[in-house]
Amino acid sequence: SSDLHQRKVSWRALSFLWSCMPFLKSTPLSLDNKNSKEIMNHLIAQYKQLLDLQDSKFSLIEHEDAMVAVVYKVTTASGKDYVLKICSRRGDYLRETYFLRSFEGKIPVPRIIHLVEPEADIHGAILMECLPGNFLNVTDINEKLAYEIGCILAKIHATKTQGYGDLTQTNQLSVDPR
Image (cartoon, rainbow, N blue to C red):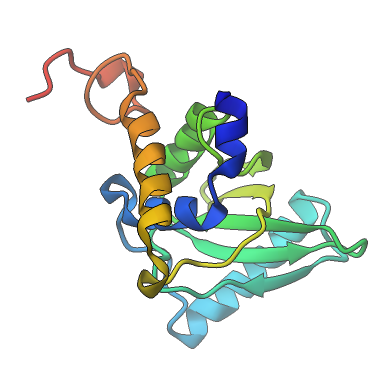
């Protein structure tokens, strides 16, 4: 059955797939300098309050595939893990939430727990469930994993949309793909 097949698709395959999707590639908020780190520490305090996570531990997830967001693993006082993605650009936030919602139930994606809408003084953020697994390394790809990735891509490409263009801007979609 389809449900059984979805459960067999590994998180590693999905992780690799998301890292390769060209519509997600862009530059996230940089954490390379001291000012950025101070800003993020201030914002984390805001997110802790907004998401009622005051007693939680935030650990930066550093990986080379971070493209549209700064990502934190959030561990609550009870030991429950979540992922918090902080998007510095509104468009990145809108696309991320759009695709997480659109592919829910079609491919394995984390469930959205809470959203912080972008505002003038705070970046948009997505608190989502933390799926088990590790980041995929290119050396981990084998025939079975390549097949799983192909199955996920097939499901993504089989998804119908209302038109062509930025899917978060439904009033600007075109019937012509050119």
